[in-house]
Image 1 (tube, helix red, strand yellow):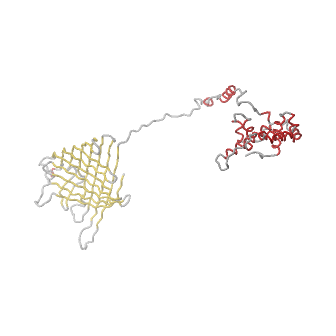
Image 2 (tube, rainbow, N blue to C red):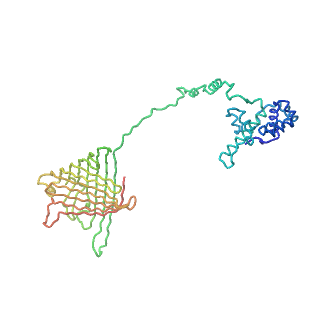
Image 3 (cartoon, rainbow, N blue to C red):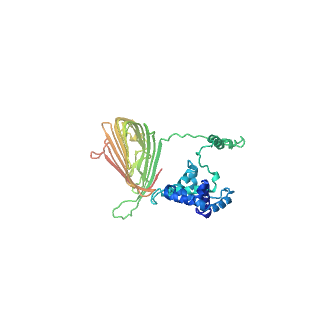
Length: 462
């Protein structure tokens, strides 16, 4: 905004002084022919503006002379509005005299732009008109400061100005010279940094431990009969799997299961085992194509404790009696989906070892009299899968098949997990088994065997 009104008595007087200066430059004879000039202007419309200026100068000569004398010693003190951005055309015009003078003495409606108020150029035109008027005031106020009839660069040593600016703007001191170099004593003591480079960890460790209890009580006069008992079942599964994401895979799984049961009707034993197993599975794989790998597998299993029957002191199984191990070579297929994972190994080459430590169990375990071990050659298929049926119910299974082309052994282990909350769960274990290498006491005895366990208790995952 302007610092003072655009139209004021002072500015009007200055404009009259500017007009007087122009009129003073006219010949003196023109001042004595006032009426003749007006008569000539009527005949020549093109000279109308010049004639009007001459009439004004003759009519107000005395007033203009006094104003000229009053402002003769005036000097610009920087208190006006020359810093306003509307003065920008003063500094960019090719000829400082051309813009205000051409517009002020134009014969086309006082030199204003003919732009419609609704046009998008209206603001620009208004600013140009205002700039021209302000320039005119500046010329009237201080005409001795104006260069009117010279080119913008005439008389100016542009080369000298450029050198001066270059010298003034060139940095005299580099930024780095302002920085003080600390003394050796002032430097903070920094210990040698220990750089630790960690190799990728291709191992995956998993574990699950569960402990279930069952208690059953019945009165002596219960109409269905029965006897009270207590059952405990402990399960532990540990896995350590290696996968370098390229070719090599090495999977290791240790499964342990041990359960005990008490029975009042069993006078020979305070408790007997209901589940007893130690099984270690090692598999080394070399990736072939997609989900297939060449694998070398070793499965080994035995039990923890002696196995008895009700009211019988005879030992039917024991630790390392038997101990079985299967070494097989083949291919393995793996699939890993969102809720279903499975592994199936097809091994056309398999070597089975059965070892019995107790001499009394050698023949009952299918070994020849006097021999503690037996080697069998055949084929094997082992498959495992886990299916998350719904949110808190899962089904884990293992299918094992081995044949030495004389006898066949098939095992199908099924574990159904029902998760109650974070730590509480229930398990149902179903274990059908077929083994035609077992001697039958009676001809009607079957080669099919079955085991079932239901338990409820604590479950922990690590």
